[in-house]
Image (cartoon, rainbow, N blue to C red):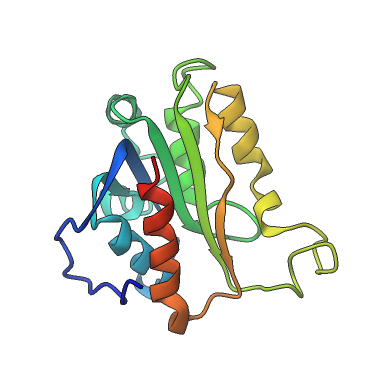
Length: 184
């Protein structure tokens, strides 16, 4: 099992055969433990480029360079979105990213690429699932992401979601992410 990866980890100790772009976002990065830790795990994988939207663009949803981001995205075969579930949705910066990067190009540009959603949630079974307050599984909260992927001609991979997250389980979550990103 992978031990919690320190913030200074830059060594590529894993490898994937699928050229992967991971788009990370957290609306409150100074409070992030899970997303920061999962991002650090992804950064240990050769073949994965990590782009953190808040690090790159701050919090200005109008500042995203659509042309540059489309050029970058074209280079990869798998696009991963990493974020905390934010009010049963994606983060504001990922929504702005999708609007700017995908909203102007129509279906087909991402034809044949894979999309993977990776998300964390504080709520557990009392919130998610058929008997939870919202009555649907956490994976199903991201149905609009699936629709976007299918509309764009992508293969939508089953989401990797962590609910009722706990910092004491971070190493386990990191292991699951690394395993998911390094499969062929």
